[in-house]
Image (cartoon, rainbow, N blue to C red; front, side, top):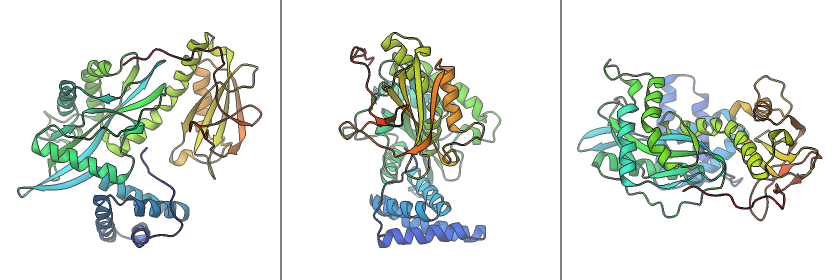
Length: 400
């Protein structure tokens, strides 16, 4: 999700070249005053591109900088995210700040995790709780009437920009937002996956957006207090949305930050959900399973894939992906305490899987040509498709 980095053409367009030049200049800046100059210049260019839906030039610039100057790539990505998820809007001479926020829900189940349209009264209830327990006094909010999966979130900075402005306009007008949800993709059938409520909060220019920003004693609350109140008040409503699921609510916050934090937080749940699913489906204990953990990536570790087998057997019967982020990426055989490989093995052991095999090599990230699912390394290092045994149940009951 957040942190778009699509493939780009090796030849840069004029727009992409200008973005690259400005990002390099901002990264090399030697003072806060110079920073401001380059930020304004870069923001103007980016703003025009995002408003016009011109994502291609930004993708090309990000890809080029990612290969040649990682620091400048981070600078450009940060500016693009800021402009996509926030806006300053003028209405009748009054200026307002608007911010797209996400309220992540970490869900896991043995069945299926729902997503889809919210009933109007439920959407209104969630918006009221968001206003009462998370957002600053005097702000306005517009909640998108949909429970999103990762596959259904805005896919590009331009898409995010468009949603931010649409919800901001609805918040300022005090109307229910009209969001076209007809062409959203189907949700992948994953047993542990985040769900998201998306909203825009609007406040007078340079005023507090969140409750933890407020100075007044009667309104100010720490982030931890806001999270506690959000969880206690919203739990019953979310339970209606996710029957048959266990879930955890994270603190609503800025869109890109929330998406990254939920991506990280869901990873341990994918391990537990996979083991629970296999034990329930095959009527076995966790101790009868084995796991093969391998690193995948083109040049550095981009993700770990865990293939499950029956203990003492070769065939991979199920698999999960554990993505890595930022500083987590690096050497496959890292000895550093708390590295992703050790975290994965710890979660497997906590789930009852003791037979764990770790590959030392870095594998190319291959996918099935027919169904697009990730392929996994077996114990011999062959890249294979995960297939449940032929006598395993093929249909699990769905909760909707």
